[in-house]
Amino acid sequence: MDAAEAGEGSTKKMKTVKAAAGCEVPPPQKEKKTKKVMTAVSKEQVDFVLTAKSIVRNRPVLQPDQMSEVTRRQSAWVDEVVRSNNEIVRKLQENYRQQLDTKGCVHVEIEVEVTDDES
Image (tube, rainbow, N blue to C red; front, side, top):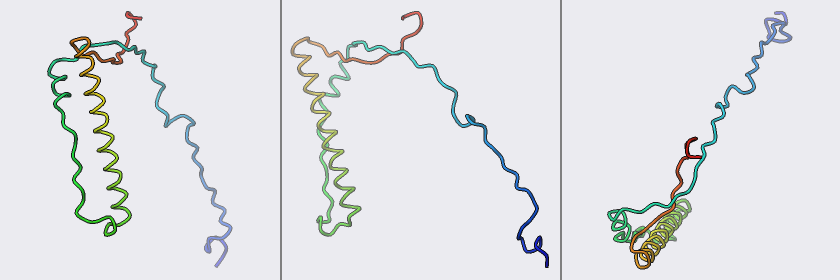
C-alpha cells in the first residue's frame, strides 16, 4: 500500500473558492425622508381607546414552588408584558381624555414620508 492509497501525503490539490466580498449585502437603499405631522384621530378610534379595558392576567394553577424554573421565568415575563401593556393603554387614555377636555378633539403626531416635491 503506497502513501496515496492510505490517504497520506496525497498530491491532489484542494480547490478553494473565494466568495465575492459584497455578494450577500443587499444594495444600499435610499434613506427615506420623513417628517412629523399632527393629525386628528377619528371619533371611532377615540371611542375604541377610551373604552379599552385593562387586561386581567389569569394566574397559573401551580404555586410558584411547584413550577419549573423555565415556567416561572415565562410567567414573570407574561406578567411584565401585561403590566406594560396596561400602563401604555392607561397613559393613552389619560392623554386622549386631557385633549378632549382642553381642545374638544384628539390629535396625534405621526411620521410621514416626504416626496421630493414636498421638500
